[in-house]
Amino acid sequence: MITPLKLKKLLNSSQEIALIDLREEGDFGKEHILLATSLPISQLELRIDSLVPNKQTKIILMDTCNEIIPQLAKKSLNKWNYNNIDILKGGLENWKKTGHEIYSGVNVPSKAFGEYVENTYKTPSLKPEELKKLIEDKQDILIFDARPNDEYQRMSIPGAIDAPGVEIVNRACNLITNPDTQIIVNCAGRTRSIIGAQSLINIGLPNPIYALENGTMGWHLSGYQLERGAAKYARCPSINEKKGLRRLVEKVVKKYNVKFLDYDVFLEMKKTNKKSNLYFLDVRSPKEYSQTHIRGSRNAPGGQLVQATDKYIGVRNSKIILVDDTETRSIMTASWLIQMGWTDVYVLKNGMIGNPDLTSSSFKPKIYGDPSSNSIPPRQLKSLLERDQCFLIDISTSLKYREGHIPGSCWSLRSALKKEISKINKYNKVVITSDDGTLASLAVKDLENYFTEKDIFFLKGGTKHWEQNKYLTETKNSNFLCDTKDVQYKPYDHSEEAEKFMIEYLEWEINLLDQININNSLTFPTFN
Image 1: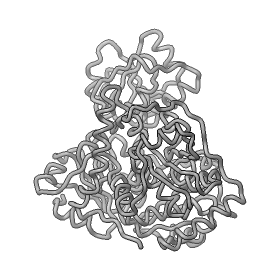
Image 2: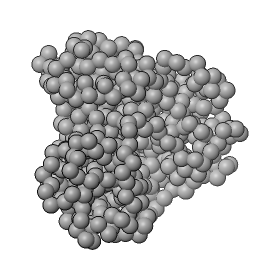
Image 3: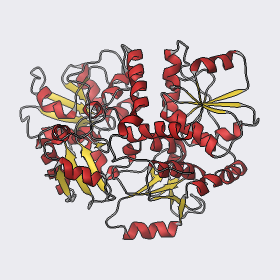
Image 4: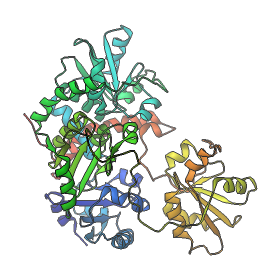
């Protein structure tokens, strides 16, 4: 056991530490410790290796108040050779009782950093009504959407061009041919708008550059129409254009003292790095990464890495090595991580050029646990469903289930399966599915010795395999067996009162900077 006071000292130290909150993300989003990483115990086998790659890491596990869940997690982690583990005594409730600050939302350090950047650098912003007038007056403007393609397609400012994250420097610059063109950067809310706009300012573009105040949510709340299914994408730069961009970001290298690492030195670092965590992240787009990448690297698109650092990096004070094709995107990403307070950040010198270890094989994180072998193929499941001979439960995220699920399936948390299956009287066969079947295979193993009177299977290849077989999915007839607390819903994920949630979210984001100033566990360095 570790006390809140001792944990506070650890969080303020330079030691590598992983504070793992084992509750579901929805509960985490309601209240949590500032520097905690959300890793629900239901996802532990799938994500621990990516978040905490070094098994000697000091790990603190926590729950709401009791230690039962942390003890179960510790037992599993010990089995996988993670042995430097403590449990927060009394969990979150004890942390609160001892007078420590708690936070709501997710990706709080990154979100607070966005507000810090705007406040510190006075990033210019444009109100939705001002942008609307520029559009109506046919002014010389370019609107860049700094979000990934799926978010952009869901809703965007009319006429906006998708250039997610660090792609705004890599791709958007080539579209800016007139120094008088006004540049407006937007995202869903605030963080990526601010970081995107400030990125263009930091490299020295002479144009008037603005972040759209409150992004697409602010546009919507102002009563303006959003575009759905937009398809305007900033193209990849040519080889010559990439060389020019690399020269353009040199001033960022000097200002933020971006460090570089030769590949041979990196390999030696990996070989001798026995006690430290080392994250090797490819910051290019998912499409580029899937075509070719350096073996062992993990895809973390630069903008998303800055926007949600704790999604990719679970250990404070760890080493981060960034790579792309020409150094440009790695430099921009590194500059932001350095400003966030990460001190051990490196750019792989020369990027991927001439690297001897390129591959197109997809990165496969290590998955722990003991998967079941009791699988059935999609064709057999379809037959069982048509004859009403099985009960089908989907344990992928509630959002994915809502966006498309196998007809007749119900949704449940993995942690609620025992309770829900015990209620089933009509069926002797139960089938569990998840996105690709991996989580379902682990869940079935949990249940095999618990329900001896039932035959329990997982769908081989999961719902993806079902769709690959051209079988239908549906968005209607959703049946949720328990609370959908597995994910933190974004304001626009709510089918009702979305505007109310948008207003609350934007107010929360704006107030974060004041709140983190209460807690000295997170400070951002200043640069002249």
